[in-house]
Image (cartoon, rainbow, N blue to C red; front, side):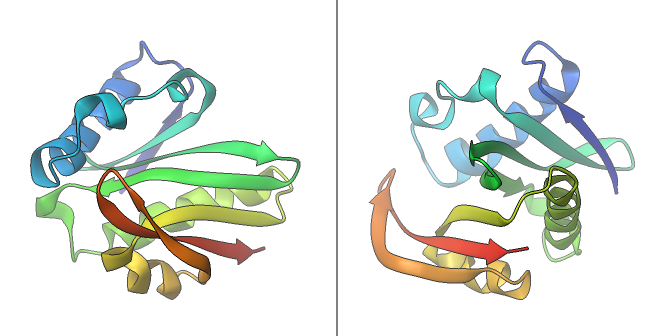
Length: 143
C-alpha cells in the first residue's frame, strides 16, 4: 500500500479521501453528507492509502492540543477490507503522529470497530455516546 498525505483540499489526494469517505460513510452507513464533510476539512492532514493506484483507505488527523492528536474519518473501501489495509493505515498514522512528538492519540470509534482499534493498542475511555445516529466510544493510545 502506498500512502500520500495532503493538507490541500483542492488536491487529487483530498478528492480521493472524500470519495472513500462518501462510499463508506454516506452510501454504506447512510450518514448525511453535511455531517461527513465538516468545518475541519481545511485544518486537518488527510491520508490516503492506494492499492495498485486505487484509493482504498483514508483517515485525517489534527493536533487537538499540544502533543495530543485526534484521528478521524478512518475508512477502508469494501474491496480492501480484511486485507490488512486498515492495519497498515493505522501504522502509517501512528508513524506520522510519533514524528510530531505526540504523546497521546485519540479517536472516537464506532462501537462495531472497537476490536479493530484495540488490536492497534487503543483502549476505550469513558461512556459511550451517539454520533450521526451510530454508537461510539472514545479510544486512547499513549505513545
